[in-house]
Length: 116
Length: 113
Image 1 (tube, chains in turn brown, cyan):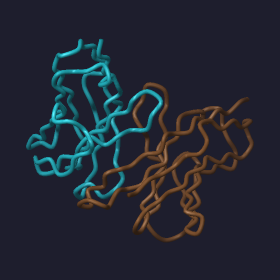
Image 2 (cartoon, chains in turn orange, blue; image 1 turned 45 degrees about the vertical axis):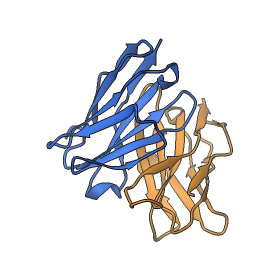
Image 3 (cartoon, helix red, strand yellow; image 1 turned 120 degrees about the vertical axis):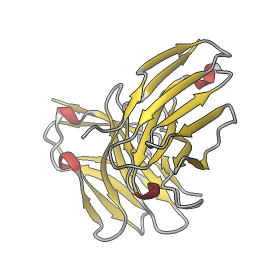
Image 4 (cartoon, one colour; image 1 turned 90 degrees about the horizontal axis):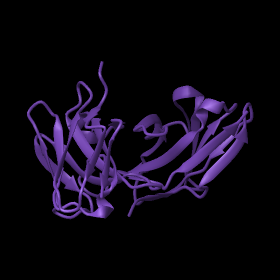
């Protein structure tokens, strides 16, 4: 069964420093991976996705993610963090095990805290 | 272009009651999925509607039911509410039958007392 793991409950980084939010996945076929961000009392906002192609995926708000097949990882990165990036980040994998509906399986989430 | 909208924003119910949550998908989207997000957890898939039919269901009891209308909007119904049903309920829409990225609404916060 498909699954994702986010090993860190919280990541702390100083403004202007690079940030990384980690995600590892387990899939039986080709991975379709996503990152979403959630601000307090809000829904999820799509950041980026990996379907196929280049291992470095660029997304919204300056975020990018690196797909690594050998390490089964899909870490979210940003070269220079902003205080406004502070939020809850979710990694998700598309579950293609039943009918190709696009059902998403989410990790537990990682809280990113960017301090001025 | 309006994104995904949900109503109501907040809802308070008591155990045993029934609730209906509503969702309008993003323009051009034909597929609606519902997720439950308990406090401190990632969203959990409830079910997906496409062409007015439930196409896939997650591990949720029959107390959770839904409907999709011809204009692609959707409802989530929960009967016999339990305290554990308290959560943020998220609606997500997508096109092409659901295989592309899903766009989420702001959610409905349900509190069961």
